[in-house]
Amino acid sequence: MPAPVSAGPEALAERVNGWFREHARELPWRESGCSPWGILVSEFMLQQTPVARVLPQWRAWLERWPRPADLAAVPPGEAVRAWNRLGYPRRALWLHACAVAITEMHGGEVPRDVDTLLALPGVGPYTARAVAAFAYGVRVPVVDTNVRRVIARAVNGHAEPGPPSTARDLAAMEALLPEHPLDARVFNAAAMELGAVACTARAPRCVDCPIADACAWRAAGYPAYDGPRRPVQKKYEGSDRHVRGLILRELRAAHAPVTDAGLEPLWDDRRQLARALDGLIADGLAVREGDGYALP
Image (cartoon, rainbow, N blue to C red; front, side, top):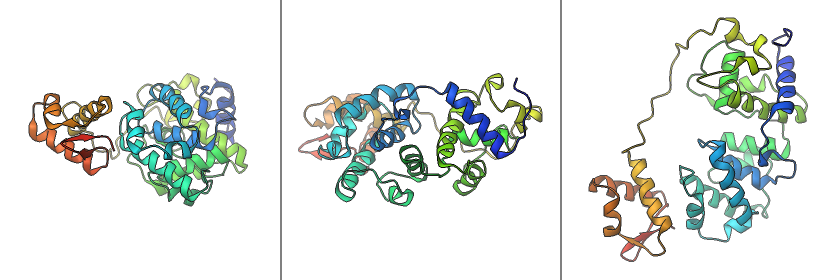
């Protein structure tokens, strides 16, 4: 274990950044030649989706649509089809709409300003800050689930971060962020990486952590979390989301509109099937075409 250090923000950031430079996973969107568009695509894809599933899809996407204008030039249904089984397919529609907005309003260049990024379709506070920080080196705090967990444990001494609060979480990360933009950019990525590969939710590997000797949770003896929790998510199997996925899979594979009769074998509960289909149409993920349904 490293010699004990101060738990102050500068010491924590320096240790975490040093660890990251030596142990970071080699991911294509972290490479110096990756475009802002490539980084934006990665951030859309990585939302609630593991890196291993994103990697082949990201490469295929950038090979097919290396610029926002390339994606904007095709129907949104092509984006949904290419999204395949990444999950949460509305992200594909938002990314397509984002590409259209970038092409039409920003000359095909991904904006660097957080507020301008926030005005793009489907871009929320996390994605806007991530693109500004990682694509352009803007000094802004970037907070995801992994970062929240690292701060909760190392700084606050809690096993879990509890329900998210954008204002509180950004302030906590801002307090740790180095002043120099380059160091801040590295620390944003490094804190995420630390939470993803070492300070994991279920089996933290403190032996691999560069700030284990400065961790408040470890020093307190790893107390169990007893604070408020996020609502438990419903099971996926048998849910409306599950049925929506079955319908989308059928529409992706079809080369002509799929009729009601073609959809019926997908699910026994007709009312749930109809509800899922109506939801896809309302979300713009499916359209009525003739006597059937297709991707938009």
